[in-house]
Image (cartoon, rainbow, N blue to C red):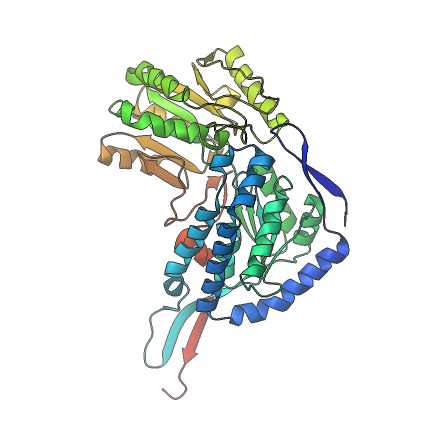
Amino acid sequence: MSHSNFNVISPIDGAIHLTRSYADARTISEAIDAARAAVKPWRRTPLSERIALVHRFGEEMKARADVLADTVAASIGRPRWQSDETPRLALVGDMLAQGATRTLADQPFESDAAIRRFTRPVPGGIHLSICAWNYPTAMLGYLVSQPLIAGNVVILKHSPQTPLVAEIAQEAWRAAGGPDGVFQSLHLSHPDAEKLIAAGTFHAVNFIGSVAGGKRVHAAAGGTMTNVHLELGGKDPAYIRSDADIEKLVADIAEGCFSNAGQSCCSVERIYVDRSIHDRFVEALVAETEKWTIGHPIEEKPMIGSVVHAGAAERIRGQIEQAVSAGGKRLIGASTDLGAAYVPAEVLTGLDHSMSIMRDELFGPVAAVQAVSGDEEAVALMNDSEYGLSASVWTQDIDRGLELLDEVEAGTVYLNRCDHADLYLPWGGIKESGLGRTNGQVGLLESTVAKAFHIRRLGA
């Protein structure tokens, strides 16, 4: 197994923010042994105690909010004033806890005097949770808090762009009184993680990241009977119907496109607008986009900082240029001298599905607008994608909106809302956007295995 150093390059200025080492073979072996030793004691820990520990973990993370926000801003370039994700992390754990007693209770089935039947959700064992860099603290609610409440033990592999978040999380778990081996973080290289998965080391792997990374995890687990949960990318569409109230929705659409510099799996990356209101909508969107200032993430208080690294910025600019060369039109055309990793918010029109910008995940602050003739064309284009994470329809006709959403191919659909992970609902995609669901009581249940009980009374 590999053992080498890696650097975290801050996109703010291209300087080294952190240097860390990938775990060596001995460290990995010791962590696996500790996790195995913790499986049975943690499984036998009463649910109320598990919930209390996860709650204290959330509170300990909130107590470390400043240092977490500092490293998020420095590591990925998000404005410092937007970088505290600890309230969301704690809230996820608390909301999972609210329904956990009911969700993890025995489920009765048809029984009689002689036979009692029920299922019991039981933990599987060791979970490897692999976290992406774009919401590096908040996503621990799904990758750490959820499987822990369900009774599993967790080894966390965080993105090499945000390793300090993992270290702080492990320290917070210890400060909360968490037992040894139940939650650990490891700086695993990609090859080492894949080797461990291929060896059948884990009961489950929970992955949030790119499609390419998810497919490598899925391939590594092939033949091992490991339960693989994948929350991958998106190319999420929004459809603005002719009766939509442009003035009331345009700020939400802009936020869906530009929040976190567009670096969210559920960012709005395709906007289909009824041709009859296209020009009015675009005019309003341009005006709203101009409010999304760009600047130094720490020294200033902009709406957008840098994207995660200069290579990502180059790719985003390349997709914009390809669209323009194919007939698309840039309506903002802003530039900046802040550095190679900075991409100002942009609006593009005159687009169609022959262009990469309407087909391939962008992960950048670009509003891509295409005019459509009406509902039928809009739904066809929304579904003309290899992705299926979330999608939205904007209309004043609620009944018709629901009919359209029923035809849209996505794991989560919204009416008059976008770019939102509702903590009460399960989260996940279809097609290339992933496998399984996390979040809410459905996600908690998916962190367990249904064990069936058939109880026969002898002599009855």
